[in-house]
Image (tube, rainbow, N blue to C red; front, side, top):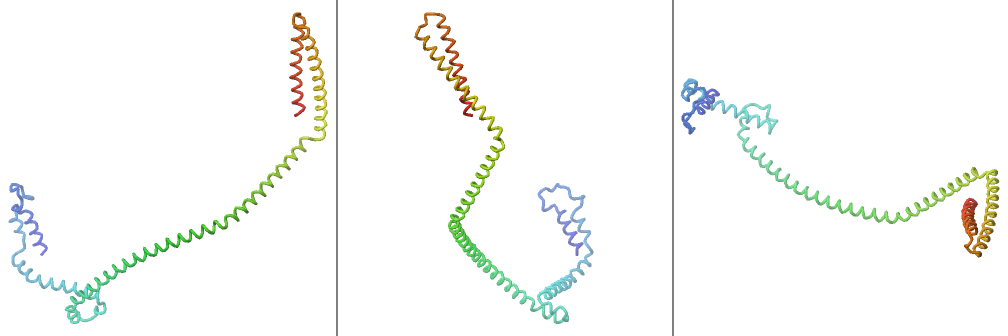
Length: 252
């Protein structure tokens, strides 16, 4: 049978009657008539046709028995007669199974729709609960935030006060390390010396200003008086600068 089918397929492909180009060369130079010569003898073909329904029936029976064993496994070890008798009811069994399958599909589809709706409803309720929970958390946080802020403020104030006391202690220690008894005594001597020098500079400045005033009364017609005036003016400027420096050093 396989040989007949294969030869028939090849002959059909070699048939140029179904193609518009009649001049097209055939495959390997073969013609459909040459391919048909490869068919089995007619006697074998007729014998095969006669036995084909029996083979098909046997094959279908095996398939039906396999299907019956699948749906009713308890009949697998029964006799062939009972199985053959049961095959007459296989069509009804399959129809019933088909209806049951369709019913289950419809039920499953309805359950899927219900589940989707319930899921949406559940998610919506969950969102509402979450929003309510967020509101409650925010209210609670606002209530306790004042107490927390006060405690934090007290803590930072105490910490700042502690840091300030530590800084003051460090400054006192630095002053004690820097200004010893000998250093303070030396600073006092330097201050006394600078004070006496400042007093002498002020007295010299006053004397120079008095001398300058007396020369200004006499006038500028004499060159010697003018030179003396310039000298005294420069001396006053120098004394003023020295007095300013002494004042700054004394303050330091």
